[in-house]
Image (cartoon, rainbow, N blue to C red):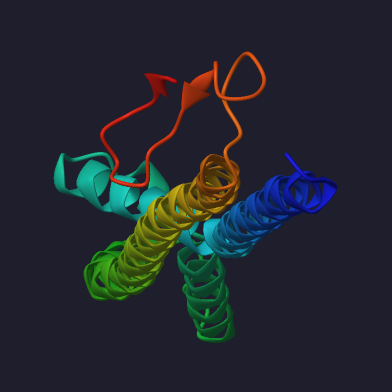
Length: 224
C-alpha cells in the first residue's frame, strides 16, 4: 500500500475519532446544562417554599383552632388577645359607671356584668371564628400555590429529561453515522489499493504472479 493510501486511511480514522469525540463533548455539555437547569429549578422551589412556610403554618394552626373550638375547647377563644383586651375595657367601663352611681359591687352591678359578658362573648366568638377562617384560607391559598408551583416544576423537569434523552439518542445516531462513514472511507481506500495492485499484476502473498490475485470482477482472490 502506498504512503498516500496509508495517510488517507489514517486521516479518515483520525477525523472520525475527532468528530466522534466532539459529538461526545457536545452530549456531555448538554447533559450538564440540563442537570444545572434542574438543580436551579429545585433550588428556587425550595426557597419559595421556605418563604411561604410561615403562611402555611399559620393556616394549619388556625384550622386546628377552629376544629378545637367546634369540639368545645374554648381555651383559644378565652385567651385570645382581642377578646381579653375588649373584655377588660368593658368591665372597667361598667365599674366606673357603677362607682359614679354609687352601686359599685352590688348585686345589680354583678347581674349587669354577667349579662354584658354573655352578649360580648357571643358577638366576639363570631369575630374570633372569622379571623381564624381568614388565616386558614390564607394557608389553603399558599398550599394551592405551592402545589401548582411544584407541578409546574415537575412538568418542566420531565420535559428537560425527555429532551435530553432525545438529544442523546440523536447523538448516538450521529456517532454511528460518523464511524460508519469512517469505516467506509478506510474500506474504500483499501479496496482502491487492492484493485490497483491487482491491475498492475501484483499479488497478495508471494511476489510476481505466484501470489494471490484480486480480480476486478469481485469474485474474490485466487492463487495466480
